[in-house]
Image (cartoon, rainbow, N blue to C red; front, top):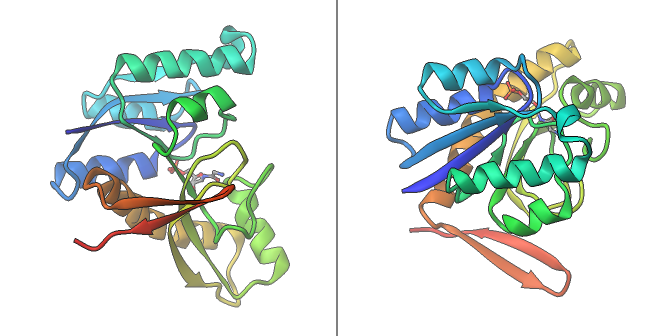
Length: 211
Ligand code: GAR
């Protein structure tokens, strides 16, 4: 069974969507650890309610970002994690982390990448930018993580219409419901070995395999 480590910084509603999918047997996997870089992240509570080890790792106590990343890797290895899921995790992973879990880190982002992504685009800021730009369509993306910010190979995307009276907040809410479908599906595809990586020079594309 695939062992999953979920990294969070906030409410953890995406973590909850994975927990629910495992409980419903939509996904055959086990979350062996949940890690947070914020002590009060509600996602830690969600994990504890399911008896999943939930660990807060202080960046401040770690010293610098590289030491923080080394600690994350050490814990994930201790919990024998095969797949790392970034579910609203706001710290930057360093090249050693990405190399250690190459093609095994999924991230959910609340826009259609390559729009409204990269440094500084997270949470509500993404939707504020979409509203400001006046886009008519937005959505959510699940991608594998590489050394860049939101630049890794795209696995799944789903779109929705921006309504004339949408605010960043209403848009965030509707995109979140998309995320809660998309992330469990991405995890399921990974767990069922239905993902193929196609390397072409410096670019990697991802193909979803049919049965
Ligand atoms: C989600 O909307 C996720 O896509 C976003 O943070 C939110 C976390 O919500 N992630 C990013 O913006 C990453 N760049 P959650 O804690 O309720 O899952």
